[in-house]
Length: 223
Length: 223
Image 1 (cartoon, rainbow over the protein chains, first blue to last red):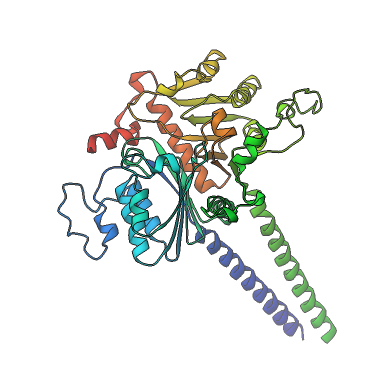
Image 2 (image 1 turned 90 degrees about the horizontal axis):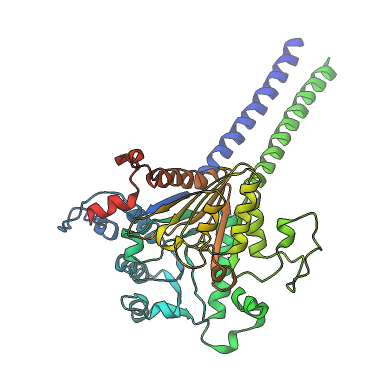
């Protein structure tokens, strides 16, 4: 009978430890699923053609280095990973490769919303007009202050933010950073802020309400 | 004897389940320890005196609202939470309250390193000279491109980054964001980049080496 006691006891212990190990293993896997990445600029210059046309990696004959992974190629890859939506809130947007990426997503049926600073949308070289002409939904913030954000939310789950404006100078010359994360506690506030600014800058005035006023309006009343 | 078997078996099951519950509880607590916060600007204007002098929250007689928590008061609080070090990499620094916070940390013995853009360090209203005069270690990036970062690392564990320059306009007028996180995968790259830029901008030329060259120098060679 003592053997039965020992067998039952050991069996239960083994089962419990296996369960514990299984749970521990599952939890070890979980953090790996939350993507975090930091990119620093300026980016080394390299050909990015293969990012737009992955099927023909060696077709480009441009003089830039090929097959080199750079901060910029990684940024482009993250943007082009969008499957359903891209919400972009950007101060300056003049980089033609980044514009090409947004246009490529649009042509694939990804829902794109672009919120830009009105003054900078009109400067020479701005790609905001190009996006509009392609039929992408663009709204401009016309407040007499800077809409200084530089963030994008991909598929409502991936945040791309930092100091980097979407310009050639920022990518190739300046010292800049881009932080990319799927952490919901960081992504969620940006989604909410985008929705608020998007609604506030709806050209149809009836959509405006006190609740939708962006923080800068509240601030100006306090000044 | 069957009672003994049942008792031992149940005892082992109860002990294992308790252990499982305890581990689950510990793991539930763990995510709460990784701080994530997002602040949006412009910030509502409010008195911040109580953040600098917590012992006398009602001593200030200024006309601003008192006891109001704002994005700016939270940002100040995070900066002032530094116990051992503050590494700041900033494009524009003219905000006097933020300067006061850095000076307060310096007077408490917190080790402070400030890396600034050379051109913007010299503009009227810049607080970089004030920090230098107070004995804070400041280095300026003199490259003919923008040192456009706006990030700080508190105690080597808390990252403060975003679109916000440390100016009055950015805090009170512009639409801006500040992302605050303790996530090591996000903090660590910024610590490494700060060290690299700090070493590269050491005024002693013997400290420069190819390995310490910031990315923008590499980029310029590729242009």
